[in-house]
Amino acid sequence: MPKSNTTDAAHPTAKDVTLGKLELHELNPGACAGPDEWLDGNSATKFDSINPATGSPIASAFCANHDDYERVIARAREACLRWHMVPAPKRGELVRKIGDALRENKDVLGELVSLETGKIKQEGVGEVQEMIDIADLAVGQSRMLYGKTMHSERVEHRMYEQWHPLGVVGVITAFNFPVAVWAWNALIAAVAGNTVVWKPSPKAFLCALAVQHICNRVMRREGYPGIFSLIIEDGAELANRLVNDQRVALISFTGSTAVGRRVGETVAGRMAKVLLELSGNNAVIVDDSADLDLAIPAIVFGSVGTAGQRCTTTRRLLIHRNVYEEVTARLSRAYEQVKVGDPLAPGVLMGPLIDAQAKQRFLDAIRELRQLGGVIIRGGDGLDRPGFYVEPTIAAAENKWALVQRETFGPLLYVMKFETLEDAIAMQNDVSQGLSSALFTNDLRHAELFLSHAGSDCGIANINIGTSGAEIGGAFGGEKDTGGGREAGSDAWRAYMRRQTNTINWGRELPLAQGIEFDLQATESAG
Ligand code: NAD
Image 1 (cartoon, rainbow, N blue to C red):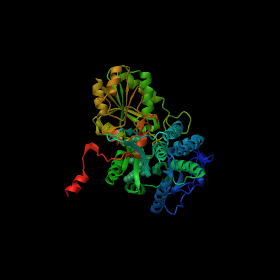
Image 2 (image 1 turned 45 degrees about the vertical axis):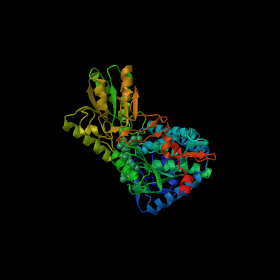
Image 3 (image 1 turned 60 degrees about the vertical axis):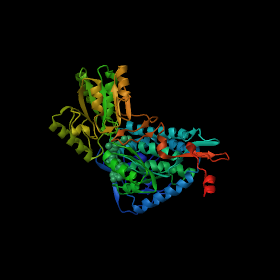
Image 4 (image 1 turned 135 degrees about the vertical axis):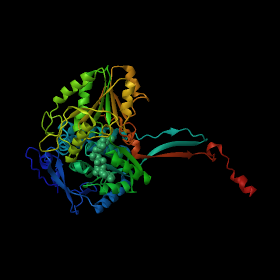
């Protein structure tokens, strides 16, 4: 059982957070193979969920073991056989009920996200809202799994394509969006007729338990076991098994490029499908016509929100030399107003980093920056208090430095000057990642250039909006080392289905495509 053994009275325990509706303390997790079927933790291994605001454990849980894994996969496969026979709009109806349950639990689940990941409560609740939004989208999508019809070149033939479920979909998620990314994948995958096995980050497993519990309640009530399952572990042994498992038709992986690259290679090696949502290194460009009243708050939210731990966090700021002094001065003043502290406390805008390692990586990056001759404009230190806090930091740097080329997952914003928009676009594209990008401008030509083929090479390119905070209606994802995957809205649902082209001959002849004559009778009589 997860133990509520928090030592910091200022922070709610898991039990406190969940007393209202989630009842986490009832669970005996490790792996879950169906509604209310929490498998006994016969593994002796337990691990803790740590509150990053205090460094103290919130709760502990048993890890799933290899036997649990087998049971979960077997149930998911079995459930698939029934689930894909359920009409898609009916599957959508069940997802609508999950959306309703999330609405009922929005505040408490948002608070748990905040408690376990250190993001401020507003952002925790916003993440749950994103789940609700995607549930709504999935309900509509369940009636729009469209295939095309084509005109056959052959007489009395009909040709069309249709989309079928894949089977079991494995979803591996990162710590920083511990519930929304699951929803992006799982709810669309479910209306598409798949069953879903989730392997969350060990750094945010309580959130996963809570979501699984909510799903279980709905699916038990509706009589559909085994559609959503969960495997939690402290490490990546079972994740690795999932990635290698021939029975899993799609792996949707969200995380770092380093891990995602290996996942991509492994899944490609077994000829299954893979959806990769990996690291970003996102830039905002501010040209000399920009409305700074829009740009400054967008840059602050983009670089400091979630303590710089979003894949879409603004990491590089490219400023036209005519407005460089003004932008850096205004930004520095805006950073002064960013209250850092307990993410559940009112008025706080930035909480801690996820763990001690993340804090150390941030401090290492600052040291490297100084060695390279970078100039700290603001911040640049850790905070001497319990938990994993650092100062939101702005530093002058150069795009070509290896430090700037990689993603340091924290509130560290590099500022750089440019002379022409073409130079700025070249700089913004000159990194290996390609997730999100933004230009602040009032110049129509600049905006169009940035959005043209000669402009941003990222999956997301915005005008007068920051790099983070995407809406779910669009397809979300990035190019190059970000992995090329697309999730959420638009036609992202196709990733969770297989396409089949069907040609039906309703005539009495057998014409071949391309007009090929294959005269069997002539061959027979000649023989
Ligand atoms: P991570 O790569 O350390 O871990 C991600 C997940 O992979 C976790 O569940 C982890 O347990 C699992 N994992 C670890 N080793 C594995 C292995 N060998 N095989 C299979 N799974 C394994 O990432 P993180 O620190 O949790 O998250 C931060 C990273 O995620 C950042 O780089 C961020 O940019 C990226 N991210 C990207 C997106 C996106 O949509 N592009 C969204 C969120 C986060």
